[in-house]
Amino acid sequence: MEKAYLALANGMCFEGRRIGAAADGMGELVFTTGMVGYLETLTDPSYAGQIIMQTFPQIGNYGVIEEDFEGKSACKGYVVRELCDEPSNFRSQYKLDDYLKNSGIPGIAGVDTRRLTRIIREQGVMNALICSEPPKDTSALKAYKIINPVPTVSRRETEVFPAEGKEKWHVALIDYGAKRNIIRCLCMRGCRVTVLPSNCKAEDVLKLDPDGVMLSNGPGDPTDNAACIEELRQLIGKIPIFGICLGHQLAALAMGGRTEKLKYGHRGGNQPVKRLSDGRCFITSQNHGYAVVSESMKDKAVLSFVNANDLSCEGLDYPDKKCFTVQFHPEACSGPRDTEQLFDRFTRLMGGKDNA
Image (cartoon, rainbow, N blue to C red; front, top):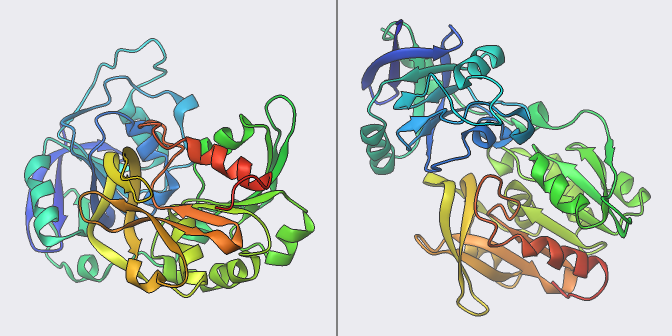
């Protein structure tokens, strides 16, 4: 058993055992509260530049099932309390530790993730380093920043996914780090999906003559994406649009709003949101460290959802522009399906039967 250390930017250091790739990993340490779904978490491009810590104590129980991957992993490291060495599931293909090794992801097990979570909740997300020896110089650790990660996780080329059954709609999906299940949720509703790189131009999107545009999730600070925001400014109001997570934030910035970094973000499959139109609450899956400042959207949009814990912005409607966006993941997989009907709302909007 090889020793490993998790060094935090605040000077604290935790000893554990190495799992995954035999390499150091530096990133922003964040925690996610999902009891299941570690495969979808590890393969979510929105974790680019971050070290993922699972709060659930035992991870890897059902092994690796490649069919459940959401994309290509972009995280910098993985932290767990206990890694299961002998997974048991009829769908399991191999061990999680093998996936980490094959993907070049360094990890550490045997650390007190409960204590680490309390530190992040109290002090906020911070940089961390998974290493073989505690660092003597932490200057590089303190200086680490995630800078404009979207181009690193977005598709380079356009790709088309056919509709399941009869084609009813054509959707242009702008890929800022899209999860595969967004595409699946559209295709199963009769949508042919044309996935475009994040650097696509508004005129190129309109030339496709789609029935609607989907803005995907993605990593990092939304304000890093000035070019994307400018292109969205030219799209919003011209065609039905549905945005998720980073897509929600970019649309708000395009409309003149502001975003802010949360203390420790919302990550996991048990995040409660309240729909303001009727007061109904939903349990949602989320993964974001930034949020739209609700006050900045006054007279620009209608606040549709708020987080039931901290009242941060979780959704916006733009009734006169045929556009609506949400911060959470209605395509959650794994996670609750409470809000999957938002995809049906999008199809109604494309059909002219919903005013957003």
